[in-house]
Length: 377
Image (cartoon, rainbow, N blue to C red; front, side, top):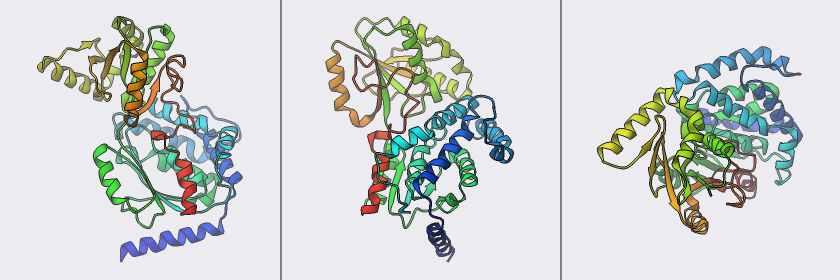
């Protein structure tokens, strides 16, 4: 009886949505203002122009929310939360959104119900799915991760305050996702098998574990190697865009890499990271496996792609062509490749792995095209 009541209320909200039609410009304008609001929290709060109405209601509460995230999830330290907020705010400009959306036919609202199961490995990791569903003129029915359940819910309040019509298009639920037109689910390889079975009859995008790699050719500058540190350590290496493996040309001096990464040594002050460092170090030593260490990072020569937290795998190569072949063979396990453009043509620049653009879809699957195509099914 209760479930039927919930479905009835949700159906009513969808019906009401038709009475609150938004054109594409309204949707863009709302997200642009949201971006301006979020941009104020890059480091310490610095009020932007034309936002006094939002700031009076939400600025103090949002600042406090950022600070308490570590108590909720020990990985969500303040600097990483602000980094994630700033990265998405950078994409929420009129020029970037307009250019991106020009590639898709989403001027009219179709109000398809899209069920989204979000991950919680890094702050706001599900925001792009959130953005794609809402700005395309559809209805988001989302299941938030318990590890990241607060920030996006708060951001939704701000968005609804900017454009009240979104109130009928954003539904957060802890129950089953039913009566959807399509599904997007992100999880582990194990959960992906469940998602594939459960959503097999519906249009869907299912994401599994992926890792990112870096390829060096020995000609990198000290600055580039330093930026690689961001690709390795940002978000404690928990993201699918975090570098967990580096390919090195034969003879590359490991000390040079260790030296370039030293500015990130304070990462060991995080208890959760330190516990992983200590645990993995002990396991390798007990198993008499060869490792290199510098007090905050373990380097292990390994053919695998996905290293544990606080561990960076490395592998020597003789031919860059062999590395390219390897990348092509394991493309389904790799999120992105960090390297100089002269080494890998479509590589991400050093330091940019955690700053995806609107076009950088997870697993290379065009989410906007998927959502827009639901109208044809």
